[in-house]
Image (cartoon, rainbow, N blue to C red):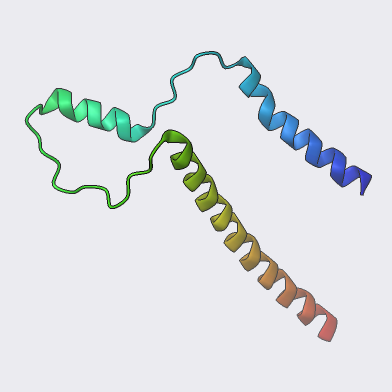
Length: 94
C-alpha cells in the first residue's frame, strides 16, 4: 500500500514539475494555427461547416478533452481487463 501511494505521488509530481517552469506561455491548438494559415493563404475563404457546440472558454475545452481521454482510457483498461480475466479463467480450468 505504501509503495502504491509513493508511486502515485511520484507520478503526480513528475507530471506537475514541468508546469513550474512555464511562464507566460501562449498555448494554442492546431485548430487556431490552421485557421490563421488558411486566412493567410486564402483570405476570402468561407467555412462550409460550423461547430455544433462552442464551449464558453478554454478551460471548458480542456475539461471536455480530459474527460474524453479518461473515458477512452477507461474503455481500453476495461477491455484489457476482460481479456486478462478470460485468460486467467482458461488457465485455472486446465
